[in-house]
Length: 288
Ligand SMILES: NC(=O)c1ccc[n+]([C@@H]2O[C@H](COP(=O)([O-])OP(=O)(O)OC[C@H]3O[C@@H](n4cnc5c(N)ncnc54)[C@H](OP(=O)(O)O)[C@@H]3O)[C@@H](O)[C@H]2O)c1
Image (cartoon, rainbow, N blue to C red; front, side, top):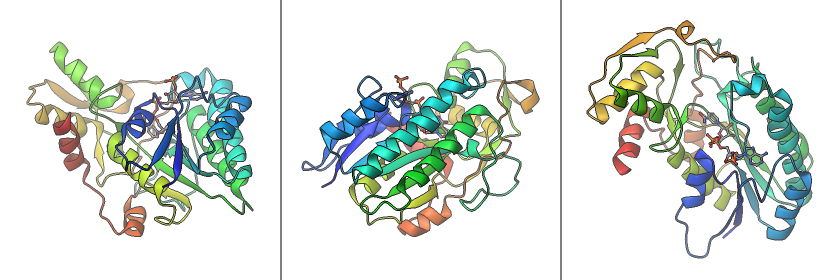
């Protein structure tokens, strides 16, 4: 079994990765920000040097999309320079890297599914920092003889716990107030748990999937309004919800109107079929 080091272990994705039940002989090292801080090159070197993993799964990131517009330096320090340091340290030590990125690397102006061949064109600080991070990973591993990288872009990540759109909707529904929910942004809600399982599979078996950039997600797409309705339906909640346009919720960072990342090439490469977002939501909410 391969030794896996997980960064960002307290985050939405990182906590699911950290909780995975693995075969007895599998070894994982779980690092939160206090042990491996992406803005601290020395802590990256220490963590890799001390634990000597075969592969790192990087679930750490600066993810405050709106705050990033005011904190560009910090967003870049974590998502671009920090990721560059992590990737260089991995490549130099023969350690594979599985890195997570986002639909925000695209402008969202397209009307059909985004493929990995589509040119990134981020519109905000967060998206630009993540795109810089992706490029840094590819640069660090170019010419590396004994290590490879995978980048998995994902969109609309949520969970049946924590802080995310689904939980915000449930919190708002509990107030009994009328809700207006955006109905002109498109994407495919993707649960953190199943994504974590796939990342761990690749980490444990580097033969499973060709190295490079992949789009992960469910099949769909849908809108935030329909996603919220499906959650309310599942939870048997009667909510006074009406659809609205993006302009009803002005935000410092522009939201992509279209965020659907085509999951088919990845699923075909794995010989699987993508799960429909609604089936996955029902499954994930059923469990917790
Ligand atoms: N959430 C989404 O909708 C979404 C959509 C598309 C892509 N993604 C991508 O998916 C990945 C996981 O996101 P998530 O939803 O799990 O995010 P999250 O819940 O915000 O978790 C991010 C984690 O990174 C940690 N972190 C922040 N700065 C750090 C630093 N300097 N060094 C080390 N760790 C640091 C945070 O630590 P603290 O706990 O100490 O703050 C947190 O635990 C990210 O790459 C994100 O860009 C997310």
